[in-house]
Length: 288
Length: 288
Image (cartoon, rainbow over the protein chains, first blue to last red):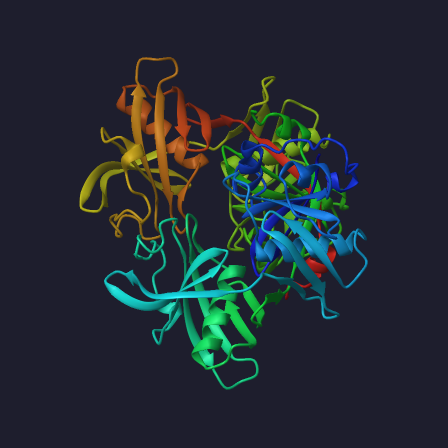
């Protein structure tokens, strides 16, 4: 396995490994070790990325993990840069879907992906945007994020992963996110992604929000798909709507989120930057 | 121009652009804009690197910049990640030399490179290490670097670029380098790279030093070729020698530095990680 593509969705960037798309769905799946993922994602010693997307046919790989796959034909084997397997990644799923279409592995405008977070519907629009259904956003209790003594009231939200959305009048571009915000550890025992958001225009169609995000275990990132969904759902509730679209300006670009009671659809660009081959001598030098 | 290689020397990482090696030396040289370099080096929106190494034949390109090239056949057109042209880069020159040999553009074990910092001799050893002569290291005056109120006495050194070498008994791995050390702005009006070093063994052959570095305008990096040379020259002087070898443990690996009055030879690994093609749609989307 030596081919790779590098690309990003609103500057959440990924290494995509396509070779196993040719694998017989019933064949044993070659391992991808945590150390291999860490080396690939190392931004100085490797290629560098936020995570790895491995293309696998639904079959042996999904059965081994006991995943529900329904009509999906392809499994997004997503790994975080630290080597851990991860359930879902919205911007990653959008890039993964774009690859399947570009490579001719899917030909419809809408299809399903198998992920560790369940089957996800994706769709391609004529303008090149790629959308993924992130499932329903659920709202929790009010809480607070604190940065250098400044308190930002916020709202607990969940999109399978935990969020604290702080809609504020403080210009978010002036907030120092170099250190983790202090949050209620009792409410968020596994950590939380904290979004700081300014409502730029409530009356425009769609409403427009500027968002910055501090991701648990990572630090500030240029984009967070579930974070944009959490912000959009919270903003709609604040302006008295249950459903609708919100345009979210993240640091790495623009995402559009469509909210209904049953779904949160994340849409935006998915861009490939390069394609290439991993050096075989380097690859085989990675310890087991 | 769409081919690239990505590699590193002690985890100083570079994007190498090889296509112009085929250019007629007398032909006009295609531009590489600062914006193109910034996009290539962007670690999230591009491929990601500390800098770009473009392979150019000595000829039109070096004449246009009025460079002395002597017997060199290849010009290392080095750019920093911010898009600026740069004179020299020790780890970059070692990776550049490895490419010329791997590609068969040079066949001798030792040859000269043309750089904006003058002609540099490089050599390849049978164990795969690549060496580059960084020119003489010169010593200046005593000065001090301050971090969070702690004062580290140091020595001004120059390898065409300015250094402040702080040999200390404080374990350098405990020092917080997340912010720039405070230095004497009068002595270093253009900024300075600050090295913090522990002498691990003065009596071994070669002596062994652990070094961390804060590079001006960048922050802490995993390696700095001229920094390793500055540390080695200073350590040798401290232990009463003018010449000799020093092994420098940087965060990204190990470098060996050989010091004589006329030369400072930097040796270490140079590793290619991947080779590939820049996506032409992405490349042409970069503004002028």
